[in-house]
Each structure stands twice: as structure tokens, then as C-alpha cells.
Length: 457
Ligand code: ATP
Ligand code: MG
Image 1 (cartoon, rainbow, N blue to C red):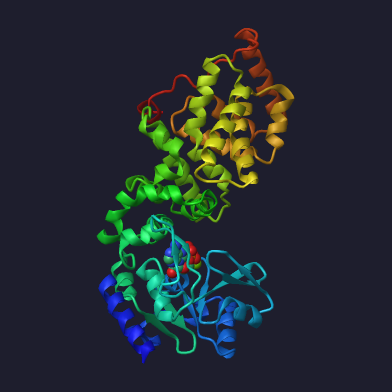
Image 2: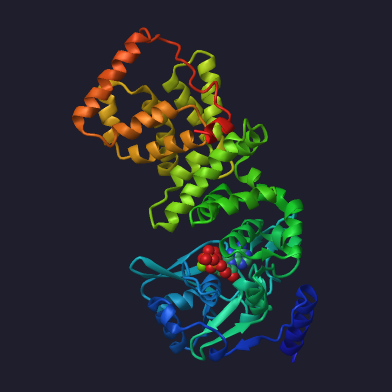
């Protein structure tokens, strides 16, 4: 009796909060396009195994959403009424992870199926004084779980027993309309977890969905909440935002909503003082290039992406340091360290990534020096390709490095004899221009051609 009242109350509140009907819409197999043949065999194994152990289990989230949209899911997530410990008992290849919300990861070689226990209605949650969800480790029913998800389109459940899709939140209508809509009150949901704002941008860029007004408008005022998100979590989010083939639109949207500056404060500042559209063009080209590589199935590394995004602050600092008489290489070393140590306050980077970033920048100085034997060492280095691609981007975006770029472009593709010729010709030219000054280096960053000159080349 008490349970019934509680459930009724919950439905009434849910209805008031979300203006959706809380009785689920069940979409049977002949009314949706999800076929088992498109679901990963391992995800199916997990569903069947949990079902036969007596638990409810559904495919949920991005997997269902993407299958309905005819896209290939990135991964498959499962929701169940089994507790994480119960899941662990069913699968030997299972590891429990997460402190904030315990999840089970089931390992099948390189594929991981993430299994989450239904989350409860939030009464046991702990919040900080500004509404941030600190702990929400309370389990619940499928219906409660559905209302706790971020966007309607991420809250669809596929049941393998019946082949049907369960929709508690009006998700099917939003899928059909191409609309991204947050579940519940947007301000409250962004306060609970500000990363949902980044997710809104990510899903709308990825799927080409329009963000509903109730979902988008509050982002402008809630953007400062981003400051409370841990820098480690932001590294993962940043990779999802920029390394999956829709980086350019994502970047434009992040700037539109005033979110970008919380991820990259130094870059935001340099964009405000941009010179002949330089950093804007450079970043846009860099991101376009990353998207192209993803679409061609070529590898993309976070180091290259970060080197692109943070280039303008580094370039400006190098110029200042050279102006003050510092040698080019030292200027690069110091500028790189300063920019990275500022940036990790917002988004932390694993050490291997910050090394990649620094290496790409330092190699710009080495590429510009072109000294004897060192040239061949550079060419052999396994970062040459990334550094050369970076130089090309600089050239294409209007930095005064055309001669350098053209030189390397020929040099790295020609045979050894021709390379020797190119080097001796370069030596002659350098000698004709007088001996290299020791100590102060010429500042190669002082003047750039305006973009219009570039376009006419
Ligand atoms: P994709 O994996 O394609 O990036 P996804 O929707 O599967 O997209 P995940 O990060 O894998 O995203 O999360 C799985 C599901 O968990 C989401 O679809 C959503 O239902 C829920 N979810 C994830 N993060 C949040 C969040 N911050 N707040 C509420 N629900 C969330
Ligand atoms: Mg997913």
C-alpha cells in the first residue's frame, strides 16, 4: 500500500517536473529498426546471462540511440536491477569501478561492456551547497533510472527478451524530431553535474540535433559552474569532444555558449585579441584536419589536438621571450612549460600527452634551425610527421613560414643526394647572409602576412 502511494507520488512529481507522461511507451519490434544483428555479440551475451540469472537487463544510452538513428554505436551500455556485487558474481571477467557510482565493467578482449545498476530517485543523494551531486549511490527501478538520465534520447531501453524499446521520457518523439532535450529542469540538472552542458554540445554536434530552448538557454548562465568540474574528468570529456570527427562544430558551439573559456582560458584570451583572424583560422583548420583524419580512419592523438589548441599562447610567449633576447630553443622550452602548467589547472593531461604536446612545439624550433646532421635526426624521429603536419597548418593559416614549409616539404620526400644538395645550398645562403649571431636569435614571430595575402597565393 505504502509502496503504491510512493510510486503514485513519484509519477505525479515526475510528470510535473518533466511534462512527460510517466507511463512508458513500449515500441514493439515491428515499429523500430533495431536488429540483434547490429548489437555487439558481447553485449547480447551480457543481456542473456543476466536474464537467465533472474535479473532484468536492458541495452541503454548511446547504443540504443545510435542504432535507432542508423549509426554505429561507439559502445554498448547495459542497465540492470542486479547490484554491482551481484553482477560480479555472474561474470568472471568483471571488474567493479567508480567511487561516485559503482559500475561493473565486463571484459571481452578489447571490448568492455559497462553494466550500471538502475539508479534511484535521488532521495539518498548528497549534494554540496551549490547543488552539485556529490554522491548518488542509491539504486532504484527502471523508471527511476530513466528519469535520472541526462537527455531524453539517451534514456531508451532495449529489451532483448521481447525485442522492444521502452520509452519513459518521450524520447522517441525527440529522436524523430532531431531534438536534444534535457530531462527535468535544466538549471537543476546542470547544477547537479555541469558536464551535462558539454554533453549537450557533444551530442548535438555529433548527431546534428537541435538543442531545445529549455535545454540551451540556461547554458549561458550556468557556464561558470564548469569551474567546479575536476580537471581529470575534463581530460576525458575533452577527448570525447574533439577526437571523434566533429571537433570543428563542437568548438564553435562551445564558444557560442561561453563554455570554451572554462576549458581553455589562455586560448580564449588569445582569441579575444586575435590578429588578422590568426588563431581562429589556425584552430579551425587544425580541427577540420582532425575531423578529416577521423573520417579517413587515420589515428588522431590528444597531443596533436592540444598542441593546436594551445599554439597561440605559446607562439605569443616565444615571441616575447625572443624579443627580450632569449635564444629560440630556450624560449620554446620555457613557453611550453609555462603554457602547459597553466592549462593543467583546467584540464589535466597524462604525462605522456603533455610530452607529446611539448615535443610537437619544440620540433617547430628544430625544424626552423635546419642544422647539418640534426636535420637527418629530425627526419628519422617518430614525431617528424606530426611536427611537419603542424608546420603545414601554420603555413596554411598565414604564419610566415612558407619558405620553411616548402623546404621541408621537398626535403622529406626527395632522395639522399638531393637532400645533400639542398643542405649545402642552404649553408651557402646562410653564409652569404653573414655568420649566425650568437646569443640573440632573430625573432621569427614578429610579423605575419595578413590573411588576405595568403588567400591570393
Ligand atoms: P556515447 O557513448 O556515444 O558517447 P552515450 O550516450 O552512450 O554516448 P555515455 O557517456 O557512454 O554516453 O553514457 C551512457 C549513458 O549514461 C548516457 O546515454 C546517459 O543515459 C547516461 N549518462 C552518462 N553521463 C551522464 C550524466 N552526466 N548525467 C546523467 N546521465 C548520464
Ligand atoms: Mg556509451
